[in-house]
Image (cartoon, rainbow, N blue to C red; front, side, top):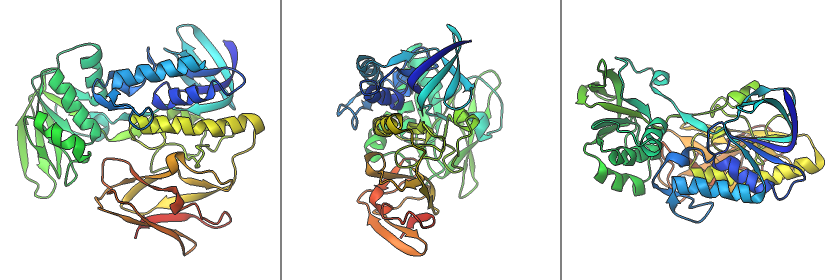
Length: 413
């Protein structure tokens, strides 16, 4: 096993990792190494061949592959080293990583580590859907990889499970492959994605959006033949003929490396606990993007990468332990909040946002932050809180917390 020392090791070459590399490489003394397990960098956008990327970070409206190539080129031009087909298999203690690639085994020791491993969709087995085990069942990522990278034919008639933003991306991908969408199934009272995506997406579908419903069975021996759908309110079941099923959304962080590194984890997001500067519980180890809050848009994750650069540079200069922090907690119908810690050094969150995932639709919601029985602030946002997408509230809601006080709880007022 060979040895390598770098200034910063970034694990993951998606939007957040590449953006962090581009921000850090010109500013630090030493090598900034991006470690990517795929053959190319760029992450999920690499095979999402439709428009809608780069609006918040690049101020552009471009396709996923163009976005991935642009972020890759920016990191390269900044001087970062991008190593593909390389897998971090574990920790060698501290900020040392075991790395395996076609070039052999080596131990990479870094002055700072940024985890940018992203998130993945839950496949059918993780959702415990019974029935036969035929061909024709995919996640969105598998579907897009087959259609956009390998130009494969998928099927003729599909049912999509989920109605998140990525679900409408699946509609576009199916259409490109010549496969009609027979129905979209969501457990929520309405489709979760923004109306700007839902309305044109409906025009591309050949069937309904079945809300308050779930898929309870997949039938077919060699190939999918049909699915059984149950209405959650009435219990009524219907059968939809199809030869393809696409499971979309229901994201979970790729958190295995964070867990095996002994980082403090958040039970709600299933990612590492971080403060406003994106510091984890381990000194010199940071985490960004959809590892933290599955799932934000690609440009939102990229802005996390830009935000973390300042904290990494401070660590490289001073090597100070993470500051004392106060925990932020959320009450139902919020499912999770990120970041979860308010540091006592005055750091603010990426984009000045406090991020939530909510299980109920709330128009024009008003939020309240409480610490030790005292209301810190109340804020109303002009945008709704809706299931299936990240809800943003201002960080100022919790910024006045007493650093010597107890936990801060955020709820709807």
